Length: 406
Image (cartoon, rainbow, N blue to C red; front, side, top):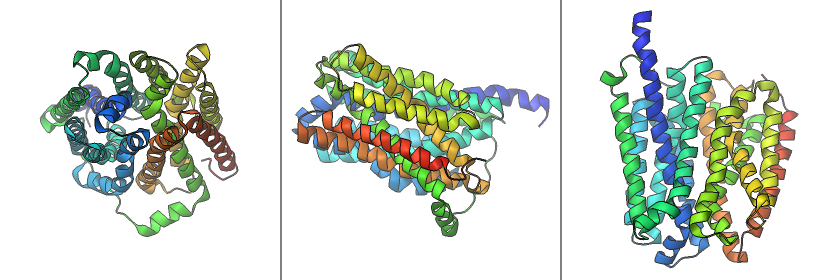
């Protein structure tokens, strides 16, 4: 490519990054929106925490089944079109939530969101890898990964304290408003990614490597791959459980609903900073040690979140956000660096990672809901998280004894 042709493409790729960020923001906004609304939705439908936990865990369950088909679809239609489809699915899920007449239809509406998730998880990094090279790629990855964190911050901070009062307590109107944000993000991305607007910034995508059952089985036979997949389940259990239940947990600690929403934004804010900084610091020689530190932070957070509002609880929220900030990113990087994973099968390995991880994405919110309802509080779910983080530290030690380093 000549320098003349590269210049406009270089400028446009940062606009395209903004479009990817907008889609991911809408993803985070929609995925976190139900947490602050557990009380009014449960009261409207006449259901308890167990049912609400099942509803909030519906989309990761769908994600597990949809991950591979969505990956194959991306190979056919390309990442740019895949992200448009993802934005439309998020919008449709948000609208269906706002219109759901009962818990069954709400479950289906949330499940629809799980069809858009794999298109973003696989499509966004694939597109960014084509747009950026070298150090700019790391910067771009850090920037677009702040999207879901900031979307989550907006949901937990604004839902109970601003939007719900502004709409007269109508939780349906809040969910429809969030669907409007997702629709706008999809429209912006479609405009930016149109060939006339993108110019030469979007490279043509060649056909992906075909699915091979033998290659799939060969990956699963590697003990280091199985260890990373097991860690992914625990990482997403931790993240999704708190993403959905933290406002309710803080309310149970004695905070008013509006204040609980603001306090619940603390981990998301810490996560934004961590997502930008930690992956840059986690060079291959440091990666395992930093990941161990993140798991230890999650362990301490699970203990401190038993406390009543005060400095100790704030420290727990900060540590929880730190633990969530980059653990998934570092685990994916470790998976991609495993020497026995073929380079032409990294896409398959990544899809396998997210499919396994969303098992934890289902178990996290469901377990929190069932245990909190059965025990009348959040002490039991937090003890499960404590045991989980100890298990993750054990898996990390086992991984260190395998030939994982490049």
